[in-house]
Image 1 (spheres, each protein chain N blue to C red):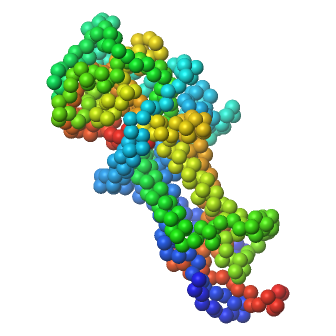
Image 2 (cartoon, rainbow over the protein chains, first blue to last red; image 1 turned 180 degrees about the horizontal axis):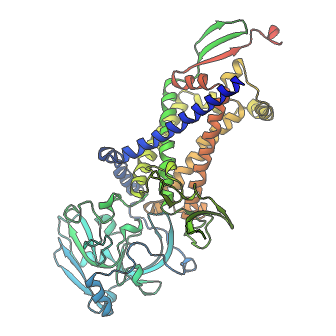
Image 3 (cartoon, rainbow over the protein chains, first blue to last red; image 1 turned 90 degrees about the horizontal axis):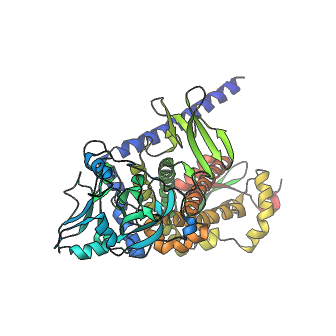
Length: 257
Length: 285
């Protein structure tokens, strides 16, 4: 009887110890996550990832798929219908007044209407879009290789980064979505300034009228509702200075896995 | 192997060096990494708590999905679908209580993820850092095991191990404790479990993880094709994680059963106490 009670007591103690140990372990992880210095330590893996994967993959093409694998609807995420005044005005006019600008550290700043963009040579590719959340969707994209536009604009020697400025205000605070990649990704043969999805103009939710396709990156590095392409020495001067909308919110600039 | 002998009325006890120092250090680094990787991995999974088969996600037919749905009582209910079956998993999967007692919709509950509150960005930071640490630690372990002959001498299945598999199964089922020399060797089932984790699960989890990176598409396309596509790779990554967790649970149960203090000490200081039969002739009762 006494023995039984003692054993029950011991079991309770053991359970409390285990639960307490587990809880403090988890609380410790959360405390570490709130420490800037610890997150900096964790972030050391990012350049390692970037360098190793870049060295392994170089400019190799991402997988392309047969037309039979195209998804009936291309799932959209982030901004689905921008409500900024400049975008609403463009949409109301059927994007006739849309101009894509190529600016910054270039010899020849450029401006393209949609019609002008459509007359340039295009590349069409059926690729897999990988969202940072974990899902994938396959679609056919048609657009002008960014390399082609850069060749026309001729980047100046100091240009290291390509910044994409967008029309949408995902944060809802008056700022605009932006992203950036280095020149290696910008000149990748599958990096497109895309104006068609599955043979039709890009739908609003997928980034009309023009969005980026950067196939060796996750979705958040492939901005929609593209307004301007700017060449810069670094991304420090844009947004909060970490290279993109999601980067400013703690995501990695590398944008891979 | 050094040993000291302590005589006693019941029999002879010896204290031997069970695990060498590098192995002990790598064992605990490995555990730290596994805890961090599972917790942060579940955080990442929670960003889209569903699994698919193939290259892309067929959102209407997931293999596994953890959803939050509003029940007739107006409250959120966790529903986990596996294949065509749906289960109410409120409190654990789909819908669970946050630290402040609030019911929240999320795949795995806060106590299972790192960090607890939802943060895909931080989950990714944790995951990639500890993935590298785990891979480097694993590479060190492999090199050390080859150089010290730990792999060949202690882990590799010998002909007699294969022959002893049926007997080992029976001994496990009867909860028989090995004594003497046998207690210092990994038994055949133990060897198979360790070899399976080291040479099957670990490479699988690294390859399926790495091949999910769009950057690696051009290099690991053959591998993605082999496993059925990127979403298949993600599903396999998840299943292998579950097998790792299963291995750890069984491993810890075996430690508890075999004598938690002695086993724990053998992995902390290396010292392990083992009962030794006196001689063959007088050893039998």
